[in-house]
Image (cartoon, one colour):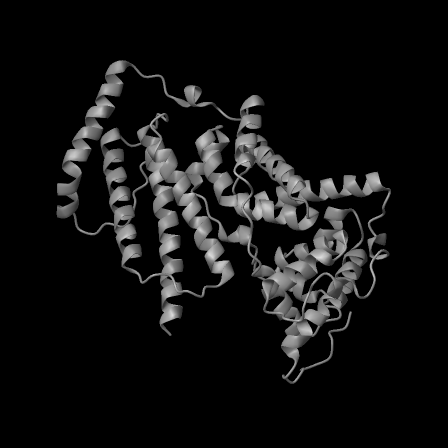
Length: 201
Length: 194
């Protein structure tokens, strides 16, 4: 699978990266302007709280300032920044889960089958707002797994590593999330011949 | 995140069509820009921790006659540039001027400025944006325009003492962003035409 993440679409002149590595504030501002939107968006999707997302965005860019001198350009700058943002957001969520005494596995327990559709979600898969709302209605862990897997292109193994859990945990979270999101997607298949059954696990 | 590894993984509970629709939908969700105060706070923290060099430190030590020299060069460029631009053939490649003399850097800067101006003209020549646009395209266009505006702000801020090297870097980035913007707007115009 090609890296379809928005981070991958952003390109920065290597000269600007070099100047940022030397502590040039203007170069850092250019990098910030380029990546602030995807960084903030991923933090907001993970936490759902703008104030947390703002803090995490700030932490991400401070980490970039600290570490960019070590960036060797072997990977794309966007992938490197994305990894920092994801790590920061997951660290935040983990500490929140710990504070609440909640395990990573049990946040489906509070959800009922009707929850996704009760969050104002209609059955119009072309409507980004509906999908956004459906995603937001998922339990935190599943939302994170869906985003990392389907948008950022992480494998289950990588997700497991990031979350300190097993691959089967990641797969299970994804599967449950898909079951919850499926009503949104069925409409698109309506009126068409549905080719093939659900892919097996 | 290689293709094979991903293909080997399971897509539970969804048909291939549903999975494709979900992926396309999620990837099409628009991004959100953080409030402006976030950069301000980040910058202040970066400066407080000594991670960023402040403007006064970034200024290269220079004597008064060096400043006069730069000002004179800028004046000469301002007077001669329009005429030079009319005579020059289309030049789109920007030479790598790292480690070159100030004269060559000035030429590179002129080339970038001219290229930027040409791109602006091409952009203006495109038809207006269609009334109905994809949210993701609109967001990308707005993002590019924001980034260009941020660079323009830096280039025009009288309180910022930019070196020739800085100026060239910013102009190069501006041209790169303008090209992306033009490609996007052109694609948008093409779609609207059909």
